[in-house]
Amino acid sequence: MGRKRKYSNAAERLRAFRDRAKLGAVLTPSASAPKRKAKALSRPARLAAVENELQALADELQAWRDNLPDSLQDSSLASKLDEAIEGLTDLASAAANIDLPRGFGRD
Image (cartoon, rainbow, N blue to C red; front, side, top):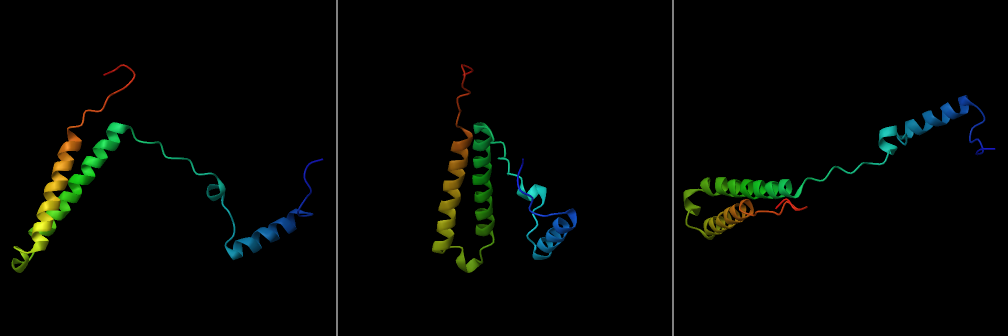
C-alpha cells in the first residue's frame, strides 16, 4: 500500500515547499545527507603535523620576543618568552627524533 500521502497533488506539495523556503527551513540534499568522516591521517603524518605546529608556535613567540620594545627586553615577559621558545623548540626536536614502529612486521 505504501505510506499515506501528505499532499493530495503536486500543486499543494510545491506550495508547501515554497512556504518552507520562505522561512529558510528548506533542506538541500547536501545539507540533509550525513556527513562523511574525513579520512584520518597516518600516525607519522600526525606526528609530523605536531612537530610543525610546535615549531610554528615557537616561531611566533620568537617574532613576538624580537619585536618587544627596549623597555621590556629585560622584563619577566621576555624571560617567560625565552623559556617558552626553548621548551617548544626542544619538544619539536624531540618529536622529530621519534622513530615510530611501522607495524605488521615491517620494523
